[in-house]
Length: 236
Ligand SMILES: [Ca+2]
Ligand SMILES: [Ca+2]
Ligand SMILES: [Ca+2]
Ligand SMILES: [Ca+2]
Image (cartoon, rainbow, N blue to C red; front, side, top):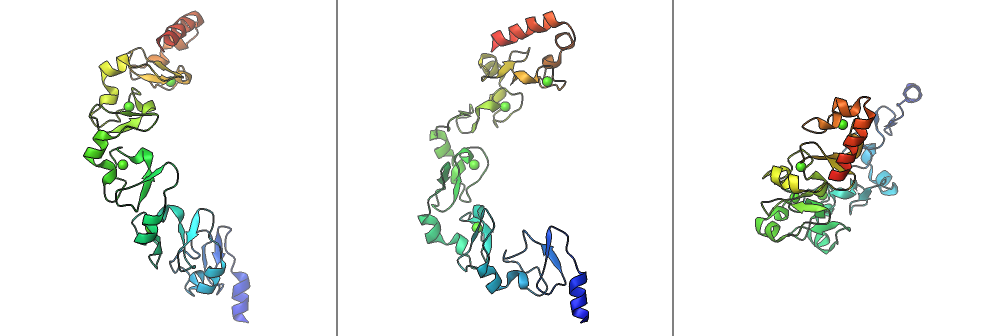
């Protein structure tokens, strides 16, 4: 009787759910069938309960049919399934990468194409940053090779006023003076940095030379403003 009373009196907030014993609240999204026992009565990992339960969106079952792991954790070279099935070598080697992803040299791990030669090690075997490979590598669409001939950066990061190439070549003054801004962007007065047109006179300084927020341009003097705009558009 006392137990029943406790059971009824015990209410979990919205984002939590009761364990089977009714004595404890655990996160209803993360706690159930994640391979970790979080309920004192172990009901969150009860095999029968978990076998009958589908994984939530973006998650998948381990071979045991019990545990759910995030899809991104499949074949990432870190063990997430208690039965280790997510990193089974034969399975991972036979598995194709999703589009826009490519295999690391190990034939197991998949990474995004944009992660190749980006100076971050994404493959556990480091093959994505192999110097010989990156020297020969043609950057993917909308990417640009830094002067070192190794690193690829997104084209919109060229001459944006921030260094992205480890050799700083994306912000090299000579290079940027000669560089035409991508569409929708204009040069600051320094003739080097490109900013989005919409950032002119938006009260936030984007140009390192502060020319996008120049008082004369932005305050009142409409004629000057249009003159200036015409110059900027011409410069595009
Ligand atoms: Ca894994
Ligand atoms: Ca990388
Ligand atoms: Ca940059
Ligand atoms: Ca601005």
